[in-house]
Length: 241
Ligand SMILES: Nc1ncnc2c1ncn2[C@@H]1O[C@H](COP(=O)(O)OP(=O)(O)OP(=O)(O)O)[C@@H](O)[C@H]1O
Ligand SMILES: [Mg+2]
Image 1 (cartoon, protein in one colour):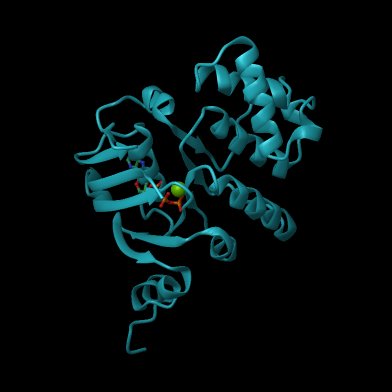
Image 2 (image 1 turned 60 degrees about the vertical axis):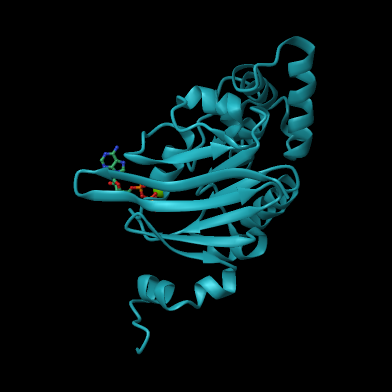
């Protein structure tokens, strides 16, 4: 599998608050990496460093072998980074198709018929065909989340960054979201911050744990979840407890 993202020695602090401490990891195409860690651990901040919304104090971000550390956020979207947020913010007065089309225009730089064809393709791949003509403002929460992911895909992203998109969904809806992500994984590298551990268990190839901005574990779900450091962080259990 080819490498999509390489993060090397990322550091970032807001005064005394360290949100990234020498963070390094890589993600290949076809791989889904789950990110967990306590509230305030720096998960979303690391996403912002990758997306170019935050500037690192030091370190390097490479996408498809290209150093993008100094690239502004909008150029990173063009370079292949798509981000989906916990609280979707579609254009509520536009249809699903129009929302996806606008992401194809602005994020992928497509025009005319090519943009329309690509938007239709993305809508099919994200399971939104029946909702294509529905106003985004009238969608269910699950479909709004799907639209949020569809907009990221529509930018022609190689790397999809999903930040707690499962939040607020029912168990059944989370299961459908996981199915969707499993399909998208075939064509993308995916990094997914999520507090719903069983969702990550089903689709993530690796779990990366952040604590006080530091990567404290990176490995298979079962190994990471049963590791002493994760037990300590989540359950307050020291190794000898
Ligand atoms: N722009 C900023 N200026 C100052 N402090 C910030 C800024 N952005 C984030 N922080 C702080 O950095 C810490 C990490 O925040 P971040 O949002 O990255 O955590 P998180 O792991 O995503 O948490 P959560 O699980 O709650 O989403 C928090 O203490 C937060 O208040
Ligand atoms: Mg966060």
